[in-house]
Length: 273
Image (cartoon, rainbow, N blue to C red; front, side, top):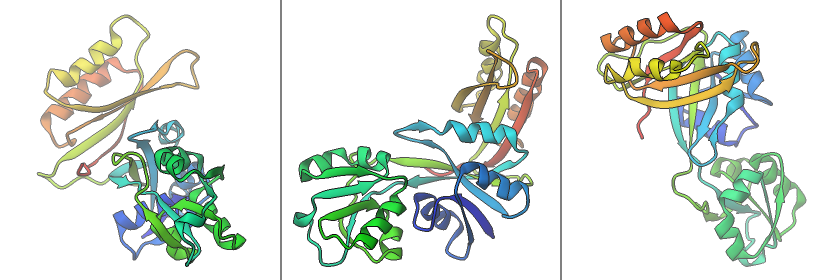
């Protein structure tokens, strides 16, 4: 299974891909989200694993836009626990650290720990880049914040594990493929779709009502500008049922009657947690 993901080996997306697919996957690191989508669309990869939202930072809007641009199907999801670690060359004690390098988001998410440590912070483009920089510099007063796979790849020691401020730092990843896959019957399922509405009073209320009347739970709704039409919007919606559920089929049939554009992005097994 050739899997496209963002970033070099040792990135959070690499860790998430291994957690979902196992170590036997054939990795295809990409330098952008657009390249991940294109790799699957053009047949260079069998799957792509892309983040869609973080529990602390919110939605990744670029990937919502790419879901509309490409005719790919969501066939799975994975909730990945982002654990930040302080990494340095072997033998370096925490007391020697004067400067910490990492991605700006990682530095922000470890604010309390870094404040208590009293160190200078230096932002770089990626956590894996930070780990490589620490390895290459050989400086004993500089540490990186990155994952444990980055520590292994770059020969660094974990000085402190789990230094993030919040234990709720999860990123939700989507698994993309060229063909849809139906989730097994009887397992918790989720369906994702995108639609537009006429710009008239009550249109969104009516659209959401097709799910409420059938007892379908909406787990996510996101609006994005529709770039083809000024001041009009696309609505991305997840509900917790598969397309095999009669209520889901009925809801989509009714929604289709009021939505100028409606596309099911995927129906897939719901990730635990």
